[in-house]
Length: 130
Image (cartoon, rainbow, N blue to C red; front, top):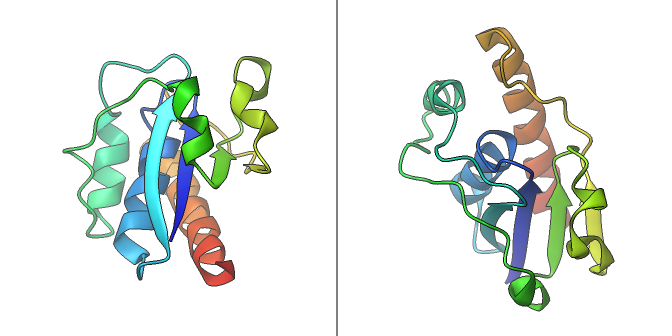
């Protein structure tokens, strides 16, 4: 089983959705985690709502601070596309991927749904390739 870390600056939206999808769809291939370089104080309510539309409850998840000392524990690191490369030593991991996703924060719920669906597609592709 590979450890994957979904990383974003705030760890309040995209990375939380990715962790939720990875846990929901996983068949014992990945151990999913998420963290942020400057984590928010809570998961974005619209992210919780649009994930609930898919039958996935991320309301119990919370933003977590990236701990650089734990980076060697991860096999794969995936950035959501929010510029963490400028502030995160994790980019030096062997399997660093940037998904380049738009940030839906402050946008209408339709944008959250669009980003959510793209994250699900990417997570399913990741699981298929592992």
